[in-house]
Image (tube, rainbow, N blue to C red; front, side, top):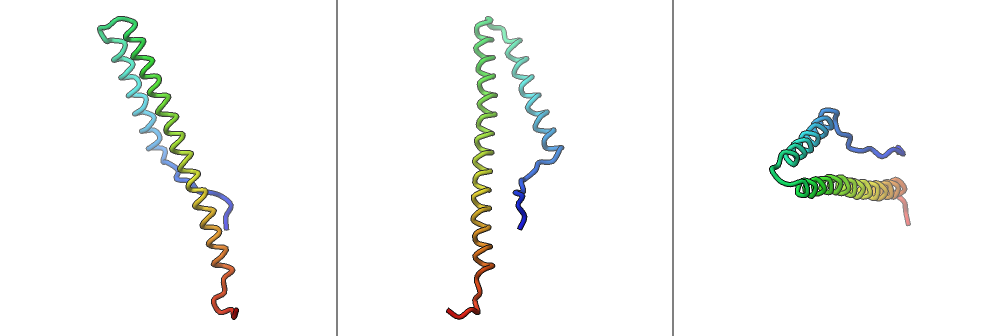
Length: 95
């Protein structure tokens, strides 16, 4: 039985796509806010809103990842217990 916990690693292409997509979206929103025909107060409010949304998205993603890893670990422990029980069980043994 191995002591390592395998994780679902993403490919480099998927990681690059996600990073580029995030960068393009952030730049597009930033440019949109900068070129809006409104006063500085409105631009500031929208900028803070975008910043809050981005940081909240990162926090939510971290919480979802942590919960998923916790579930995988509990599942792994339960699986190890079942394997141990099955390995120790002898169906031909007389009670």
